[in-house]
Image (cartoon, rainbow, N blue to C red; front, top):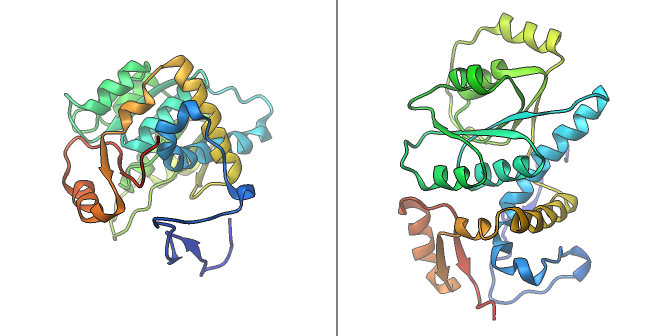
Length: 259
């Protein structure tokens, strides 16, 4: 939440990360993962991003006193989108997820297992999906395709919240119905906000939701761990897998055996 234009963050901005064979840290800065969740602990970082984007929306909407969201849309079906869809389902919401890839698609099958319909934007637009399953009380946009943000603004229901978590580099330009969007936000008490990184509370909430997920959908989280790479010395293979593996959900490095 810094207001500084130049900031330092390990592994993200202007500082090397913690990728090392051996390291030490104070236990006060660590979030403990129960032994029963140790196999899926590597998912906590993307989970924390989703948790913050959801938690911030709920904090914002406390202003309304009566906000009771029922319908949500998640834009993007990668690791972040899958986890966000899961967390929203655990909160009792009706969720739809949209992505670019056409079925058959492993991620779509995983979403079906937790009761979330998947739609490819190659077949149906967000506007079309919203006409059937919306209007949405909450939308999480994580595609990196900035024109979709403005379509999402129009798919929001009254009192709806749009959380934007993707970083869009480039110089795309798009024509939008600005008067319509402006009027909808004013008369509908809508909110759009950006979210990045996470706090300790978001990691802790991720652990709690992982535990709840294991009860509600046993084994589902582990299915996201599609491409383990053993050992730091295999970093070249890791980077190659990240860029070239088909149907990859979570590519990760096993620094050391869990046993």
